[in-house]
Image (tube, rainbow, N blue to C red; front, top):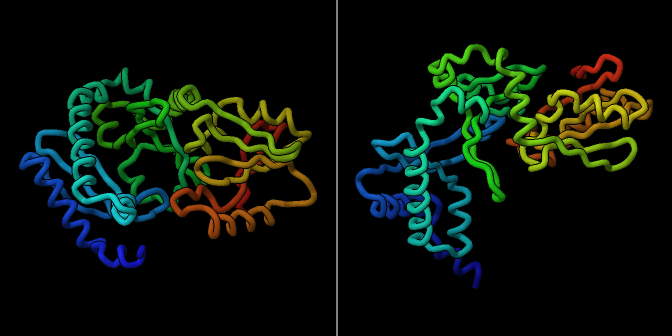
Length: 289
């Protein structure tokens, strides 16, 4: 029966055309829909439905993977279109009310935070972003727009807007934005055993940036007898492993590469090698060899 129902479903192209048609009818001539390929973290391409309104900076985006999956699971096209239309109207109204405040230099400075991503794998989108470099990683600046129990909403700070506001260099503002990040997303550590800890933030989202928080690694070093490795589990967390003769950087790099290839989502890969924290120097080193 399930197989028969699936055969009656539209293919993805037909579904996309029908959804866009229904959505356009519901929203009216003030809005237009368009499809594009969006490059996410680490160069992963996603098919996205954009909805634009001529007199607004608001451009809500919807991932077709999720929409088509909802359709295959039984959600009707009219219901999906109505749901998207309601979101578009609500988001555009929010943007209309708030666009001016996000162009306010003083206000935006308190909402800026950063995320760590792979530098090489994201070089295309970094051309229009504001960021600083940390070894093979990029600390990218974002603006927090909303935070509640359901999650957070933010947008990547466009280089054009940064230049318009005459904020100077990213390196100049990096310390303040790092303080913002720690305040907005405090570090959280989970101790797996005496030799291994997990470091992230309280939301467990994009928590790898916690390795940059001032004093965090130094405080954690008190729980280890000596130096330790920083293993980039994903963009969301890192593992802190006590240095020992049992496992060297070369072995760990091999493990990280294998895990990234087989177990981590492509868009969530942070780096293919480990880092090293020196307790005496209070400094992180990259272990590429």
